[in-house]
Image (tube, rainbow, N blue to C red; front, side):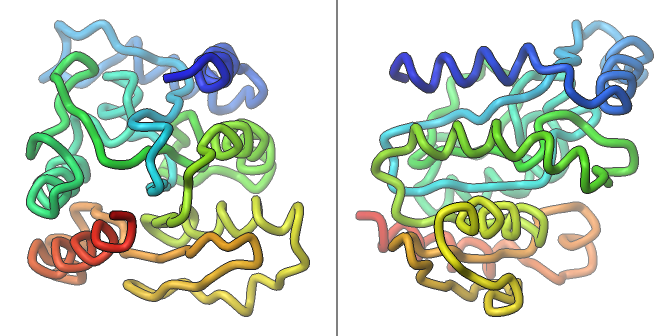
Length: 225
């Protein structure tokens, strides 16, 4: 990890722009979940992680209350992470099938981040909170010099990259509808794909399955080789 991404990471962690999110993330970190009472919760904004030299960026919505907000790493220690990393490992994009804690030895063939760096109440950030966080995401993206493919996990993750692209290119959101497995080549030369979020709800209702996600991720891996 070079100095630029380290600087961006430090700026993200120290951010207190959104009073509602600061209050909520702190409250969760103090109250904790019964099964994690022995944890020292992170309770701060959660920056991206992974290989900043990779061609692949994976974007989600926000840290989970008892996942990223507890562990300090996005898609770590929650049900969505359990499913996602089984799939990523099977597709050859992660060295292990689980993402449990910051020091668990996980390495990625990709860089993973979220549109909103703090856990929002009900997993629903306001438009203002999303806008406040946009500069942090932009700073991360601008450190990923080899990026060719972006995978938006869920509509907000997907659209967050379109909003970033709109700052330098004249595009219309309606021309890029979110659909699972569908990719769009953007004017910047980056290809943006959408995928259903690996949430328990989507997994339990079979909206997304292990085989379906692994097949899709393998196709992405082939594109970045």
